[in-house]
Amino acid sequence: MGLFLVTAYLIRRVLAVIPVMFVVVTIVFLLIHLIPGDPAAAILGPDATPSQIEATRVQLGLDRPLPEQLWKFYTRLLHGDLGRSYFLNRPVTQALMERAEPTALLTISALLVAVAIGVPSGLIAGAYPGSVWDRVLMFGALMGVCIPGFWLSLNFIYFFAVQLRWLPAGGYASLFVDPWAAARYMVLPAVSLGFNQSALIARIARSCMLEVLQQDYIRTARAKGLSQPVVIIGHAFRNAMVPVVTVIGITTAILIGGAVITEIVFNIPGLGRLIISAILRRDYPVVQGVVLVTAAAYVLVNLVVDVLYVFIDPRIRYG
Amino acid sequence: MGRRLLRNPGVVGGTAIFVLLLAAAVLAGAVATHDPTRLDPVNRLKPPSAKNYFGTDEFGRDVWSLVVYGARVSLLVGGVTMILTSLGGIAIGLVAGYYRRLDALIMRFTDGLMAFPAVLLAIAFMAARGPGVWNVIVALSLVYMPRTALLVRSTVLTLRELDYVQAARALGSRDTGITLRHILPNCMAPLLVQGTFIFAYAVLAEAILGFLGVGVPPYVPSWGNVIASGKNVIREAFWVSLFPGIALTVAGLSLNLLGDGLRDTLDPRLRVQ
Image 1 (tube, rainbow over the protein chains, first blue to last red):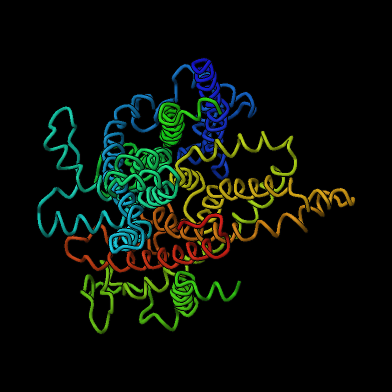
Image 2 (spheres, one colour):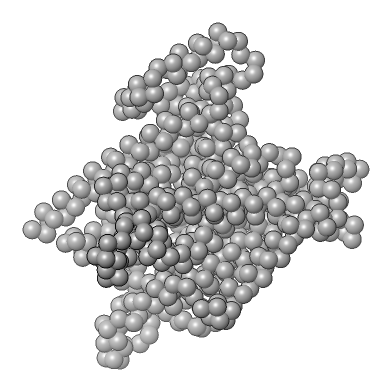
């Protein structure tokens, strides 16, 4: 019975991805129609002749009615075709795949930083509310929310790369080619991107810890004489972690967006630099591709979090 | 209520800092020591001094004056975005919460919009529409509106089943009357709290768009634009990006203190102990 309910829940959850992706794809499609005036003329720039503009319009299918264009966009997409980049002269999917690795590595490293700082800070602050540690950590979390990540990156570059010369100011090496260089390049971007999100995680972890510590089974554990560390680590920790897993899902989504900006500051050849250079060259299929991939990554991460939840919190299985 | 707000240090401190920023923005002409757009190549990259409090940038512009005038752009974008997001969110949220048939459709659409990382959707919008203050405001309002709509909708869904709303319906009030007289006022406190945070997000997002070169045009003094130009000269002149960043942090701090304080005071259910 339990297994049946779990399977039914998982199937429902997977199917729920379809309408969301439908809306996502439609919005990405409509982006090109937000261009003021004639998109074909905007893409070609001011030097284009009328016949070139007409040819581009036909090539993009802009001369067809809107529903037909949308239908074509969907069918092409289901065949894994995102169009061709005007500037890079290759399929958009290929350009995306070449640039996905740095962005993925940066997002994952930043997530590790955010969790490594945020979870212990929040749990300690929540376990000893009102203490000096609580005040210091929560002040740090407030600053983490307020300091803009991209500006923090610049300050890190100034201190750790320009002044102290400990770490490179920017650049990238593939983890699979030179792991040591990759790690050195990744430290500053990952810390500056992860710091903001660690603040969010710390705040949630703190309030979860406070809530768990007020429950009856904790009082029972204390009443039978267990010491504070045993109660915190053995009894409260696991239950306080359940909502934190959801926050980590949200965090990942924000990190994907933040990675785009961090890449610009640190000169990392990922999706962020791809979309910014595509904007400057009016390479709209690439812009659409990057936006679509990040939204799809977000939907996927949330799906994974919801599935994980079933295993972490058994109550969900019967909900 | 008023007294509880005045006793909250976050509300008082946040408001005080915010009023200072607002005063600097409104009185920029008097507070600034130089014309922020005047180029002065002889005095380029000068460190902070009595003449140029925050130093000068690579074109010899006075960074203090740039920061003061930048507050105008930031607060304008933040404030108008907050207002537009709230109005749009109220309209969409009330319709979704009260008319169940439209609800499923609207919710699928907001789910889809919220699947995009907020900044990236704004970047894509700016890519299509081109730089400009008004485009930044529209982009950020579109990006944050689903969040406000969800908040209003969930408040409506809780309230509509309450006895006093049922009583109003039994007495023959119309849907629009119930919505405007009984439901909307109860959405105001959470909307105000969320509006404060959206103000903070919008100020930050405006700076990010400017920093990436897709926000307000580069000749307009804005915090993001100045930080972007400081990035190129960070080795020789760290002050160009340092001071607008501090201004951005202070603006974020004031709005977050205010938002946290308002939440604790106005909405005890959301209070984090």
